[in-house]
Length: 112
Length: 115
Image (tube, rainbow over all chains, first blue to last red; front, side, top):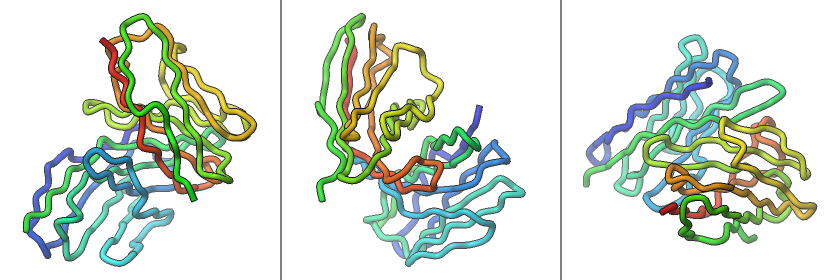
């Protein structure tokens, strides 16, 4: 059973601070990693993907991957109230029979 | 370009009934995946279809089934509904199967309530 674990939160940060969201996964053979954002009452939308160890930056977002530790994180710099949402970590694994497994999500609240 | 369209938006059924949900992917997308979302379990993978073929299936009982048509539209069916089937059912489309690191585009979902 492939598992993806996230702290459920809520994680509260003041506006302008850095929000750090973490995710661990159980399948060492996992190949691709994604962060989706889901606003309350809305459907998930992809904000970042990362495939190799290290950091990947896109605007205020940085995804970090450490395959040895089976750990992936998302940093949001200069957090804004509009970043308040649930962030879902998703892991792609299963060579030949690929499946995208989601964590239960971390709820982020950015306080003005 | 129209997004992923799911119908109906809301459904209320009673235990033992069956239900069919529909998903129309973004034009040109040939892969459709279905997920069940509940507050307790989060997003759980049901199945993925590509070119009318089921490519993968999650850990759900056989009461959950699906199919994809030649125009890439997909339906999922749940027979003999149970109270625990109450959930938001999300459909996601992509150009190619998930194994190609494709970006998934989600529909608004069908909220199913089983009484």
